[in-house]
Image 1: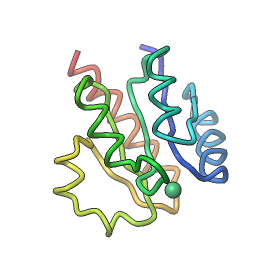
Image 2: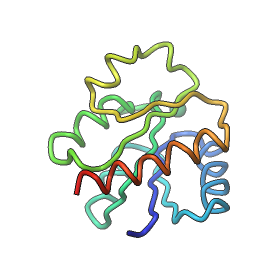
Image 3: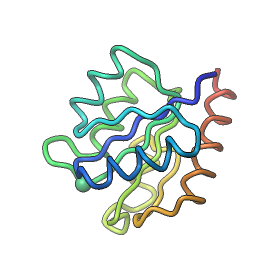
Image 4: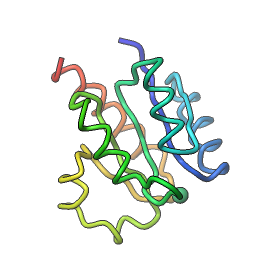
Length: 125
Ligand SMILES: [Mg+2]
């Protein structure tokens, strides 16, 4: 399985940081600055793991995950936000997230979550 990860974040800084970190960890990384852009990429390619910011203009991360889950129950979706306290865990699980992480980004935590995500994805095959 290709180790492809899609990062969705509306902040340039976080997208670039995640792209650098995840590339260094050996993942193939694609980035999207909005849920709309992410859906466009997902029409072309499969990503076993998606990491999405929660607070975004237009469609936020919760709505993005809910909409994705209407057609895709397999992809592992991880929420990443500086404000996870605004979203309680039950709400995130209900929206279809598999995991959630809090900014600032901790490389070890992210790496562990992604590896667990790939394992989870394969079990769902
Ligand atoms: Mg944001």
